[in-house]
Image (cartoon, rainbow, N blue to C red; front, side, top):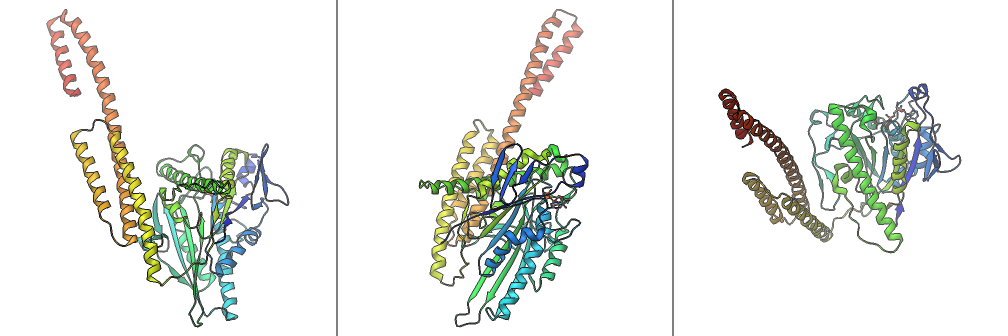
Length: 488
Ligand SMILES: Nc1ncnc2c1ncn2[C@@H]1O[C@H](COP(=O)(O)OP(=O)(O)OP(=O)(O)O)[C@@H](O)[C@H]1O
């Protein structure tokens, strides 16, 4: 299987009118005629593509996305994901908008997919073609279906299928017959996306979105060849510093979730990049890739280090006010360039022996994971030195539940995967319970310490009062008795 590196493009947006009014300076520039970017005063980064503030939507699409649509129609999966600070132009690049209304990547991809399919049908290269779309939103670690607005508030489950692919259970896949139909469906559904106004962006996305265009092509030849491929267009929420956005309350909580997810994406990129570099030095060692740390990284599994052609579109705000964030984003983008994918046409297997073999491999992988999780649980339990009897009972219950899950060893890999997921969920609950109990214990200790100190002072005072009047003595004794009861 051939290897290709993830392609990384950088797009620097122009300074916005409000930034020009406040006299912001540009601190990042593209070196003309190259794919290099300089950041003041002396940092240089090299990418596969670099676009300055004057680049049009069409120019960006033609240079780096159009070739991916061609290989999509040849049966390869493709992914574009936009990454960058809040307000850096991710949604503009992927969905379009703004005053020029040139149309973003989604619009260009939709038109080309139907255009190329038409060409293939007319030239009898294929006999049948179908296009479906799914549109998901990840909001505060919950997967919501943007195509199913009535039940959109309900979180969907994410799990691995028998081939180890991540699937979202119950996600709607709508059939579309033209680019216009696809675009109006996306436009309507996007209205339900979580957004808010922050100091950094008038319409800031509070969630990640994953739009998937699924294509099936069929030739009615002797073997009825079927070819299936998908294009994932991912708009990640932007990294943000709470101090700069001024977010509070609900939006503050959203910021924490966004930053945690982006940290998980960063950790996956770092681990995959390290694995690729180790391999170059001929000292290949197995590196753990933490895909399971967040739902967004699970959904990006095939795009990062998998079988897809992937482009990371890194969006950058040129203002010197964003210098630290820009350097951070460019640093991660350079790391991502090391990641190797293994693009392959998606095989459609009907051989039961092949599927059994895959299931066995998957089960042993999951068994390993369960073992690691159990060790993690044991370490956590050992951390609590003197639990109360009720807490001890609670921990014992957790342990029993973990053992039960491990003993349920279904034949089918998909069910086993579900068990491993339940285990992870329960472990997280266990961790939360432990943290809460530890916090309560610490709080109680601090309160007790304070009360003991007050008691000591009262005892001292009591000694003095004993030499005073009878009335004063009575009060002091009562006070000491009350403090004693409180401490108990
Ligand atoms: N290349 C560009 N040309 C002109 N205007 C742009 C460009 N890129 C972004 N903008 C404008 O910048 C503002 C912020 O862009 P956008 O909302 O796409 O940022 P974002 O990275 O998606 O932010 P968030 O992560 O907060 O959702 C918008 O007003 C958008 O119209």
